[in-house]
Image (cartoon, rainbow, N blue to C red; front, top):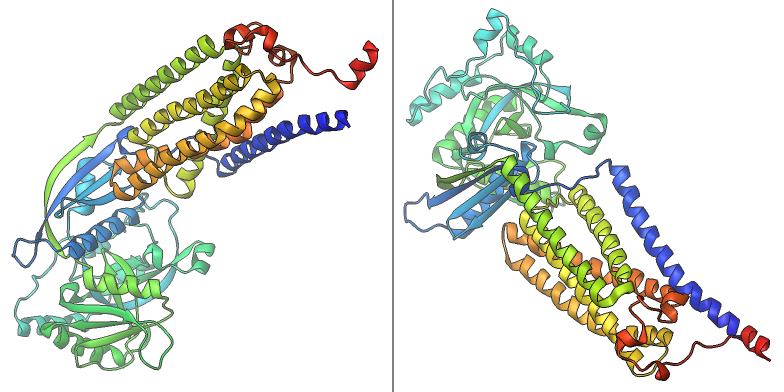
Length: 549
């Protein structure tokens, strides 16, 4: 019976360690499967640009509406992300500012991305075709270089937009009568999504569906829809309101939009011209920044200035389209403020300094462990080592799955966690020492000390984790990175203590070096301040008792 109990005791710590290393191996396999072994780095470590935009209410009252500021932030964030810029951070600050921070982008390029007002327009559809989606949207094919074709790709408007209603209606009449030239249709056949094309309001436009509007089937096939669009018929500023909803006695989501007085007149003429046209000339493309958001058909002549767009909408897609129609142009005027460039070399210096600081902190913890806990320092080193591996793996995987980018504040959070983990070791070791001083055997001291220490460790880590969660919720910008890293490493510390440190100590104390408290183990009686005569002698097994008899 004694042998069976002893065997069960030996199996339990080993099983916990095996399970722990299985999880660590799984994380390694996930990194191998993703093909990424390095974490994503934030702006301050990889270099890039941060700009500040200061808003003023378009009404001239001087007050900035908070909802308009948030809508402008969402539009700017959408524009930056649609250009394929990873780890971009767009946040509001001070009630009238938007801060845009983007890694690996220089100042002028970022200003061009977000410093201009979004362009929303309604254009007639002349041709629709499929195009292979570009693998890298930054690689653009050359436009046709023949003299006739080059003359058609003008980058300046041929005419100025009339301000009066009569002149605007006259211009619309000529735009509706426009027919693409043979050169334009031939060039459209050769054009693919990802190729450059100038967006000029009074000329044709080659455009594709925006990425978030492409269906799953087209994504799987690697294709997108491309459109040959005519000159701009109605500007986005003519839309006075837009909303998403389910009409009474219907079950599908639709988008309702209304135009201002001039827009109502123009839309009446557009609907009259398009309703009797053959497909696809009966469609009008809703274009935002040279991307097609939607291309609905004109089913009826609309004279009241209100229209309904129906289709295979969900609540999210209908709401998104309504927001684009309502806020395609930024709802606020912005002035460019600070433009701060962070070089990659400066980022690498900061990273190096952070790693050196972490190494110093780690070295001090290890040195203290050797001086005070002696042989038990092996447990500290092993625990810190696997904690580092697990933290690194989680940062890499979170970067791939949710876009978490390691910034300098985040690195500070990881370094702070060294102290949190060291606290857990101190609490556990000191409880074991206290139990040994009370006359318990070392094996009993380990188990009893653990039962008392784990409650303190859980409470201490829970306080640290709660602080990190509150800081993450209430903070903005880079401070969120610090809070996230601190919370992540605190949770990992709990897992390490329960599933690695404690089982490892339970195994070590069964060896003669640690279990008998030999010199240098850190558990010798003199080092613990225990009278050797009071220490219980190791239990004799049934086999040894038989030999003595």
